[in-house]
Image (tube, rainbow, N blue to C red; front, side):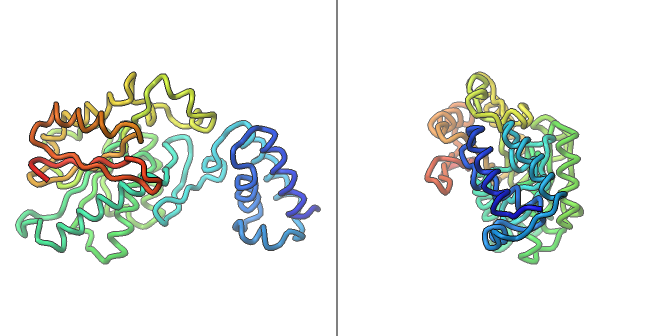
Length: 301
């Protein structure tokens, strides 16, 4: 047997030698996962003994991380918007900046529920999450709506993805969080089947990385599905396709909320002006102050 201190020191050195940016953090998280404890416990008990089984598990995790595999895939878990989601190569790993997308969409849903924006005769508020992947956005919204005691029949959430495998992961995550009954899963490429809309709120985290820039993202992203990252030669190909279809998807007075690249605010605003004349495009920064969320609606702001 050995101690957490010895294992941690060895892990940090191995990951540092592999050229990883955060060797200490990665080693702490992986060791905690191997022994079934969180990082704080690992750091608080450096002389605790670790059995041969957990030590071997940690060693195998270090090998995978040193080869570039993301920590989220190694652990099989990624925290997002206050919940833990299952993560594996079937879908993109949820990013912290996408949490802002959830906040903007939730704020609009709550405005409709509490501010009289939704006619009483219109039925449930309808939300469409395009490219749901692991289900992060749709599930985070559903969990938060449940926390706020919004009945399931007042907000209907459709989660759409072109990948059946990604939708399987989304279903698993939804069931794990007890919101499977609040979501409907649809296999489709951007546009749901005819007659299934319109929606009051459309949310999307589309692929927006230019094809030529994918290789510069680093080894971790090579483990993720390229379909969820590759935005075509300009990085805006999928976004343009989506914008062209918004008028047929959004209900009158509806809102579309899209995640964009940090350098794409001007380009997206120009595309909206060209393809959706008379529409408003508002850009919201992420926690780093970078342009991240584009909110679109028909008519003036």
